[in-house]
Image 1 (cartoon, helix red, strand yellow):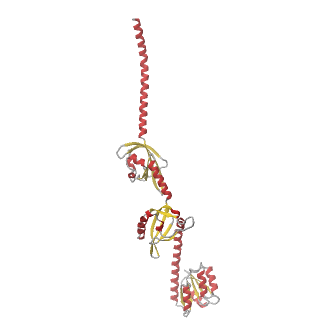
Image 2: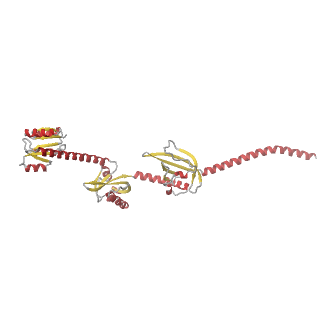
Image 3: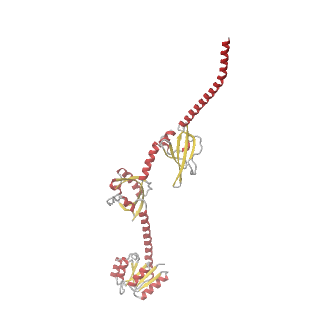
Length: 401
């Protein structure tokens, strides 16, 4: 059911149209002149307006001009009611924004058909407007800088985040081709991905560098996808500032390269994702070749080290690590877990206990020798007492003789 406003100074026409549209289930409002019609439209926004051309006080052409200048009413479809001889006025109204016209006397079936066409068009246009508002809001409010670029790489649209990023301290706004922003070593990579996106291929996120105002070089992750605008292929480009991630990766790389203890990062299944340089040295592999291996292959006693559940507290235990050569090494495992996006990961710190075990063996050997010496000293003391007496008696015997 639509809300239809009829503006006509002839009572018979108002009643005829009201009866016809009410019969077809529409809600009808009536106005007998232009002023009343504008007030009625502003009070209760109609879905469609029938507007007579020749009316006293305020004619239909003037009413149409006012309607099209009103932000709230300019999208409401208007069907002109005219006599068959008013061709010039009809043409003028169509140029000023009228959607259709009907001539007196009316053919009811034609009248209803034209009305339904305009209502369908109005409904589709409303859906398009709502969709545009929705997508514009998504485009503008997304946290990542986003652009729409055409097949030549020319930037057609960008959201506020991208505009802010591409404006220098003097307020100069950089807008032109996306290729003007690319670091020269990344242009070939981008061209290949861009061509694939235009062809409809699913392009994985990749890393490039952008030149920003003041010659700043920004590392970004780029996500490309093809979109159709007015039957022409464009590319939606979204990029994310990864300076913090690159800094963290650099720091992690330094730590993994120079830290003394062996460090492993594994997924929930025990597959090694990252490893320190010391981990490679301990296991007898290069640092890079450890990636993708199952950490359990290095556990001598085959006791499951990785569980399916996160660890409430760090798990510390001693065991044996089996090197590539098969040689077992005494080690201490410290295992902790964390979650990222619901997935469990594990960090294992492995400390070689070979030196400590060797020191412990030396300490035990020293303690054993010390104990033997103490026992020997005690035994010598016990033996020394009777020997002293014997030697004394022997001396006395020799002096008597």
